[in-house]
Length: 186
Ligand SMILES: [Zn+2]
Image (cartoon, rainbow, N blue to C red; front, side, top):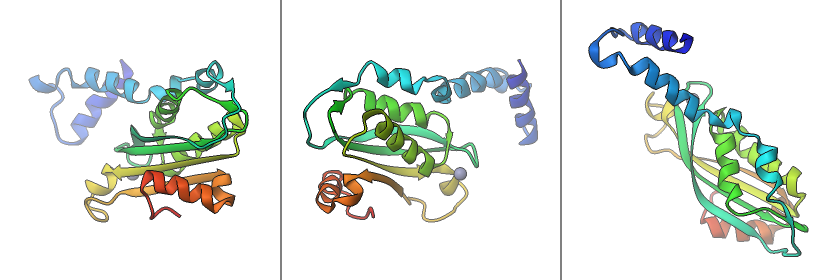
């Protein structure tokens, strides 16, 4: 398989012997793993959400916090990972709570940059639900920073996308920030 040949070449490039006994299954394992960790490319986001959208008069903030995710930095093909916090204020439409972590997963399991991941989640909710507001905050530890010794070893990068009421109304924004305990987000 062509991908396995690529992995063998990579092993040779880093100075390994791809025929070393312990490495013989590595190209097949790596191929299978990359298929799995990039499964977001094969997730139909619209289909994922469609059946779950329902009409509801509820109009208070709905929040799912501390969603664990794993993504891959497209600049270095190394993982970044952490927690996502997602909130919205419905405007007549809601989705099942369990869909939110799956939405995060669908965009995280691709090559990404943290800023785009944040925006894609927020924009998808905005487009699907047309809510009063959407807020997405993503905290990330980037192995490409840590392993290359860039910035402090324990640096956590935070990105946010705030739409509608979360951008315009200080009370909504503060309530959201209070709930995620993240006073440092702008
Ligand atoms: Zn990187």
